[in-house]
Image 1 (cartoon, rainbow, N blue to C red):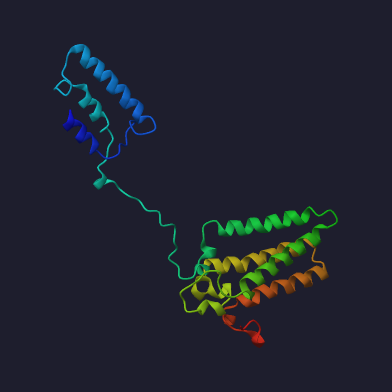
Image 2 (spheres, one colour):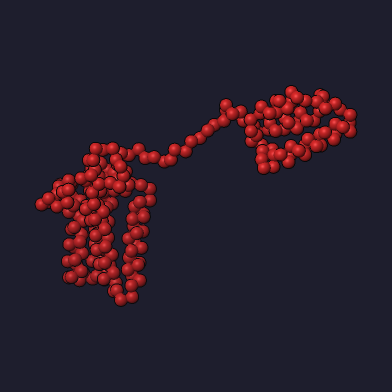
Length: 225
């Protein structure tokens, strides 16, 4: 009996149905049934027919030795990019989210009671191009701490994209989108002269900085530092 209890005490924690919070109840029921059965049948406690040994062995079901237990550490989802700004537009669903954002902006502007359809299209185009100019061609640096010795500090987001490689898929997408917006806006404004001039100037402000010839160039020193 003592040898059995010593063996039971050295067992690791159980992974079976006998673990807490219901484990102690199963053990007590099995022990009680075993002791009563041994007393009625006249079996010697701790003998070969003792059910206590079977009860303790039941706790062994589903056990895994501690030396073989696999420990998994969650260290997060770190990226391998030195500068995440270079690949943010290549992220899954980024292009779709970009288009949906433009559509949501247009719907919000359409809900304004006193705004006509031509005005709404022009406002959508202007707001889109203004945000694109500020985020891609005006703001420099990164919101991340990058180990690049401060090289990205003097570069705009457009210049950081794809490590400066020209004519990538993301660059083409961001170049075609304002052109498509310009065409749709011109159509729905019925090529009104005032709307046409405003939208044309707005388009040029986001297309000219995207030219490969102007990569890293600061005209008249604007936005140099």
